[in-house]
Amino acid sequence: MNETDPRVIRTRRLLLDAFAGLLKEKGFRAMSVQDIASRATVNRATFYAHFEDKYALMESFIRTGFQQRVAEELSRSAAFTMDNLRLLIGIVLEYLVQVESNQCRGAKQHAEPLFETIIQDELYQILLSWLKQPPPADVRCWAARETAAVAMSWAIFGAGLQWSQSRRNTPAEEMADQMVGLLTHGLFQAMEIEPTQAH
Image (cartoon, rainbow, N blue to C red; front, side, top):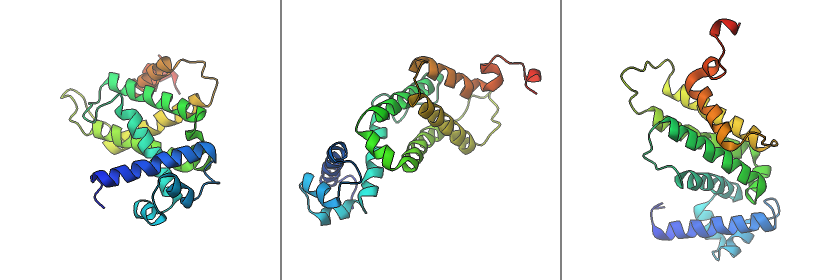
């Protein structure tokens, strides 16, 4: 299947839109493949030509939704800068709050491990693409880029998830600033602790 074919893109969009509507109306467990196909005005064979089952459609729904949210504020060619890292963290925080408060919550509730894996993987891919760019000549790299991307993506997602599910007493902008400090300056510097005091 040609992923760039306008007909394929249109059919997938119909299926994703149908899924979103049914998720809000019926919930994930109650909807069937036939419900989704009927709402999208396609037959079951067309559904299965695009997705293995409704779980695969849910994975695409979560991944596509997050990718679109990121693309609204960050270009694919964005470089690794403090401003872009702060922006990415802010996007994650806002996205997680949105998920907690609207129809996406239904997908998250029925596939929490999948949801977490997808969002963390998307963050990993963004961060890894940034970290693969050559560092400045005066910067010495102490960790493999893959290790750094894994650690940073889980830190952003984990802290963002905890923040989105709490009372959110700390504004998103301040939370993003704190996380940028931790991720780029290290624990001791961000907390203004002398390393000798940390034993």
